[in-house]
Length: 214
Image 1 (cartoon, rainbow, N blue to C red):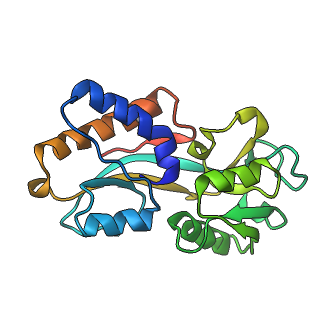
Image 2 (tube, rainbow, N blue to C red):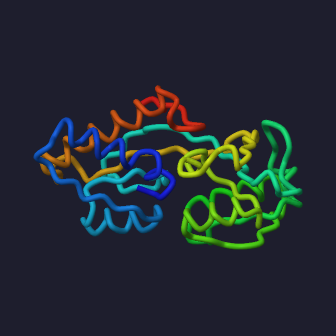
C-alpha cells in the first residue's frame, strides 16, 4: 500500500484477515506506488492498491474507490486557502510541501496545475508521509493530499480545503497478479482487501472517498 492508503486501510485489513483467515500470515509493504508496481512486476508482491491505470493486461484490476484531494494546512499558515473549497488557480501564492517528481501524486498534481495554467510555489519536497505532515503541522507550508493523510494527526490542528477542479482526484485500484498465479491465501486476501476498503468508505472512515463501480 502507499503510505496514505496504509494509514487508513492497514490496521483494519490486518484485523479483518485475522478474524476471517487466522491461519494466513500477512506480508504487508508500505511504499510509493512506483515501487509497488516494480515489486508486482518482479513477483515480490501478490497484490497492491495503486492509482496508476497503465497496468499490464495479465494483471487483475478491480476499481475500489475515488479520493478527493485537499489542501491541508496548519491554521497558523497565513497563506492557506479559506473556505470549504478552492480551485487550483487560487493556489499560486500558497507555499506547498509536496512529494518529489518520482511520486505518482506529484505527477498528477503537476499535470493538473498545468491545465489550470498555474505554477505552484513549492518550498520543499518530502517523500516520507510522516515527515511531510509534521512539516505541514509546524506551519512550514501546506500540502495537497487525500484526506487519508490526516488520519494520524489531530484534525483540530489542521484545516482541509477540498480542491474543486473537475477531474482532480485519484482512483484507487486493487491490482494483483493473474488469478492462476495467486495462491488460495492471496485470492482470499484480495477479497478481504476489497471488502475492508469498501466498508471503511461506507462507514465514513475514509475521508473524501467514494466507491467506484466494478
